Image 1 (cartoon, rainbow over the protein chains, first blue to last red):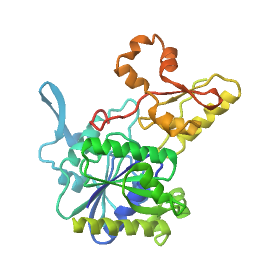
Image 2 (tube, chains in turn purple, red; image 1 turned 30 degrees about the vertical axis):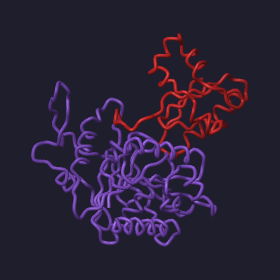
Image 3 (spheres, each protein chain N blue to C red; image 1 turned 90 degrees about the vertical axis):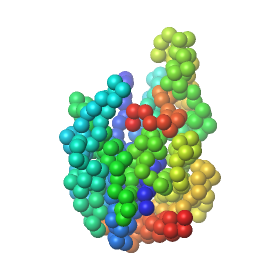
Amino acid sequence: MRVAFVGKGGAGKSSLAGTFARLLAGSGERVLALDSDPMPGLAFALGVDPTDAGLPDDAVEEYEEAGRRRYRLRPGLTGPDAIERYAVRGPDGLRFLQLGKARGPRWSNTRPHWAYQRVLDDLPGDGWSIVGDLPGGTRQPFLTWGRYARTFLVVVEPSPASLLSGRRLARLAATAGAPQVVAVANKVRNPDDAERVAAGTGLPVVGAVPFDPAVGDADRLGRAVVDAGPDTPAVAAVRSLVDDLRNREEAS
Amino acid sequence: MKIAVVGKGGSGKTTTSAVLARTLARHGHETLALDCDTNPNLGISLGLSEEVTEHLVTVRDAVNAGDEAHAGSADDLVERFGTTGPDGVRLAVVSAIQNPEPGCP
């Protein structure tokens, strides 16, 4: 399975992506979790010790092509090698790799960012599931940060701003010719909220995650909700989402 | 007074910005709200409709289209491409991503 979570800032992408990755890994799959947000937060939701580090500067080398400066992984380093060497080991055997936190106004983030993108172009294939947490909003999710995904999960709250962001993402996805793009209704409180998300975004809704104080409680503690409240309604809803997507994939 | 509101996604930047802008305007200050998010939603938080927020012509689009030649100053740009919301807050959208082509991420 290769999925990427997108949506408005605050919609719940990191919480859902982290829980989704943990549940997949807990079911015995080999999982690579990717955080493409320069304000990273996925580590908390995964239950991995947070780190600001991205890939090291020397993971890439510069070269020139048609008069333009370009970057490639250093000789002898492949994407799977980079994951083996640099990805953090997390609970349930999952691996975690991140773009890395912006390192200040005078520090160039160019090399770690290009290294990360080159790894995205050479991810391990058979036997691995990839779960990505993308930056909030509409910043090139389909052709850049999530270009490895086979399914994009647009996380949408039943609120005007979140619905508007979902609509914009659906429009961008259609223009980009993106693969399967579906919505997950998050922080649902009313029976018709999932229908509101479907109507407001024009996307099929594949899951509805209830508003659950356990998610906020885990956030405040800096813990993964799957550890702090493994039997809470939100975690149960993400477990259903994992099962549904797995069934869809097997059927296709 | 010139204030910029920054922070992690979901921390409440847009809501804080809108309440600040409306409050300043209610106290008689001429207030300009600039939405610098490439996924601009500040209009909704200021109390404008989704339709106005979505269809607000962005300053950047206008500049790209060459209309800036007819606006001699920042005030002119806001006048030409902004809108007025509740309490008299002026709103201008700086930029919006309108296509999926990878540019600077």
